[in-house]
Length: 268
Image 1 (cartoon, rainbow, N blue to C red):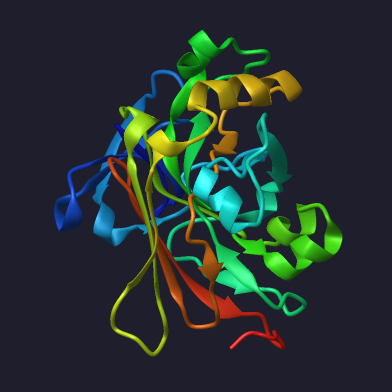
Image 2 (spheres, rainbow, N blue to C red; image 1 turned 60 degrees about the horizontal axis):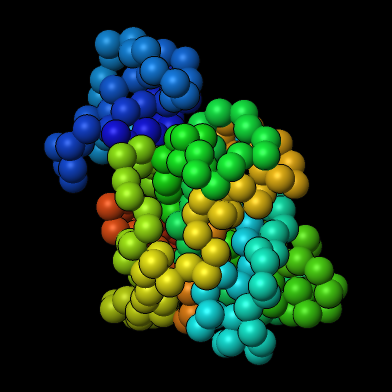
């Protein structure tokens, strides 16, 4: 099942998406997508709606250096245990919403990642029960200001700017996440072709999805809708004003966002 959130004719609504391409239909969910959703009976062509971020998380828990090749491209070896940090809820945006490059940041990178969406409140989840707390999976982009990351020595400012956590296009609830292809492509404003930047598989995660859920829930209570970004593979690189970033994960879909400079930004 694909669960989304849309701007409907009557406001914002959660929906179940059926079908593909121009024939896709959005069925309105009466309340929220957790548990056994009830439906209003209303439906619309998905093409007539605007997709929003599929969930509004209380927090986004991110995992750093969880692919060996990415850890090495960043200049080191991966940590023995997961390294986690938080993005604020205000960094979340949906498909087609611009990633805004802050005026005080000089170098901003994309980071395509598989995102876990939590389905019920949980704490101290055993690894062998980890999948039972998952609502589904979506795509995330852990946008990062590298110069601020180096300058600060910790990552909150560099990764917490408004618009630095695109997620979408929807949540896929029926998916085996353990060996999925991930592709990140970038198209410049002046180019017609997409440049492949990242190409990997979730089977190369150092710390597995059950371990990440157990690890994160050991540190904090996870609430319905919370997101865990599982880490990015190698191939991270700069994005500048006028680019488009497109991340595709097998079995989920494609998340695309334009990039624009904040007024007075140093990018271009």
